[in-house]
Length: 628
DNA sequence: AAATAAATAT
Image (cartoon, rainbow, N blue to C red; front, side, top):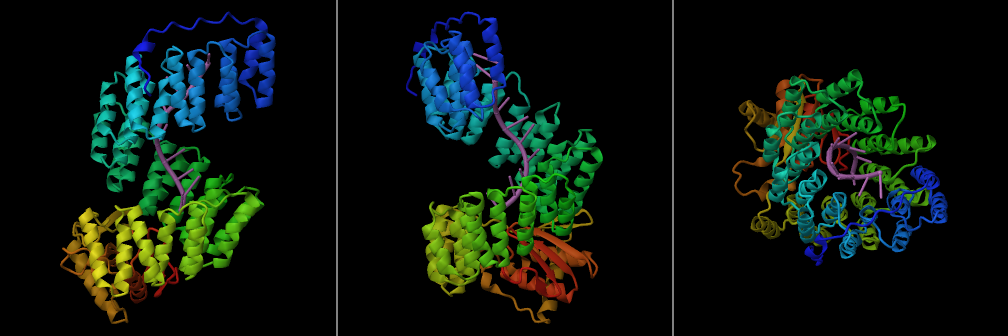
C-alpha cells in the first residue's frame, strides 16, 4: 500500500466507448440471464464478432458474470481483463469484488493499487469491498490507509463506505474510531445503527449500545431487534425481556427477526413458558414459518427441556429444512437419546435429505453422550464414505470425547496425534475432560497445561486441571494453579442458574444474596442438605471448585447456584411438580449427587440443563446414568 | 451496470 495518492488525484477520465448497436444490445440483454460458463463463452464469441472485444460496456458485463456469479470463473475474468486496453472503474471494481469473493484478499488490495497506477479513478463503489477485505484479513494498517483514500477521493460522506468503515473498526475493536465515523455521518441508516449497536455489544459495552439506541427518535423494528439481541448476547435477559415488552407498548410489530431473537433469549435461559408464548404469537400473527424460524423453535423446545414438544412440532413441519433436522438431532444428543438421534438420521436419509457437516457433529455428540462407542466410530467413517464429508475439528472433538469418556484414553490420544490438522482447544479440552473422569493425572497434566496456554483467559481450564490435581492429592500443584490464575488476573466465571416458575424467570448466582427471598432460600438449602444427609447423601468435595476462591468464608459448595435454585423451587412447588433449571456451567459432582437425593426424598422431578446436556433427576436417578 | 448489517444448529 505504498502508492501515493497525490499522483493519482488528477486523472483523465476514461473515454466512453461508442454506443452499441441493436444486435449487441440484444446480446448484452441475454447476458443477464446467462446460466453457465459455456453459455457465457458463446456470448463472448458474439461480442468478439461484433467487434466489441475492447468495449468496456460489453466486456464489463462479461467480466461481471465471471468474477461475481456463483457459476463464474474468476481466472477467466482475469484473462479477459488482461486483454482490455483501457478498463474502466466498473471493471476494476468488479474484479476487486470477485477477488474478495474468492477470499483472495491480498490480491484484491494489490489490484486496487494497479487501478491507481493505471490512473483509473476510484468511485464510490470501489471502497466498500476494499474495506471488507481489510476487515476480513484483520489488516489494520491497510484499513486505515483505505480510510484515508476514501476521504481523499471525496467519498468521505458516501453512506456505503461509512457503514463499512464502522463495521471494519468494530472488527478491529477500535470503537472510538467506529464512533467517530458514525458521528461524522450526515445521514445514518439502519445499517449504521445496527452495526454500531451490535459492535458495542460484541465487545461488552452493552450500556454504550443502549445509549446509541436510546438516542434514536424513530426506531425501526430492525433497531429494536439489534438492541434486544445485544442484551441477549450479553446474557442480560431481564433487560431483553423488558425491552421487548416496551417495544410492544410502543406498537412495534413483532416480525420474524424479533420472534427469532426472543426465542433465542428464551432458549438461552430455558424459559419455556415465554418461549411457548412467542411460538403462539408466531402462529397467530401469521409470521412466515420459514425453515430458520422452525429450527429455532425446535431448538427452543429441546433446550427448554421439552423433548416431546420438540418432536411433536418437528413432526408437524411440512417442509423440514436441514437446520430443523440438525436441531432435532442436536436436541436428542443433549438429552442423551443417542439411539433416537440415529433413528432421526435414518429418517432423514429415507426422506432424501442429505445430512451435512453439522448433522454429523450433532450425531457424534449424541453417540458420545450415550456411550455408543461402536456406533460413533461407525458414523465417523460413514460420513466420509457415504457423503464425502471430510471430518473437521468438531468431528474430531466428538470422537475424542466419545472415546475418552468411555475410558479409551489410549485410542483417544492416538486420534489426537493422528489428526490431519493440529488439535484446537476443543479437541484437547475433550481429552482433558476424559483424563479428569478417569483420573489420569499424567496425561491430564500435560494436556491441561497445553490447553491453558492456548486459552489463558478461560478460567474453566484452570479449574479443570486444579480439580485433577486435587483429586490426586497434589495440593501444592493446586496452589500453583491458583497462583497462576491470580497472577494473570483470570477471574472465575460466576456460575448461575435460572428457574422459571409460573412464567417468571428467577436467576441465582453462586453464593449470591440478591434474590428478594434470599434469607428463606439459604435456610431452605441447609434444611434440604440435612434432610438428604439422613437419607445417605454425603458431600463430595472432590470437585474442589470452592478451594480456588480464597476469599470465600462459608463453604460455597453448599451455595452453588444450582442448590439455591432447587431450594427456591422446593419453597414454591408441590410434590409431583417438575422443576426446570438452566445453568451456565457444568453440573458439579456434588450438586449432581445432591440432586439425585432430592428428587427422591422430596418426590420432585428436576430437569437441569447444563452447558453440555440435560440431567433428568427422578426417583433418585439421573438420566445421564452418571455418564457426563 | 454495482453494495453494507441484523437470526438457527457444534
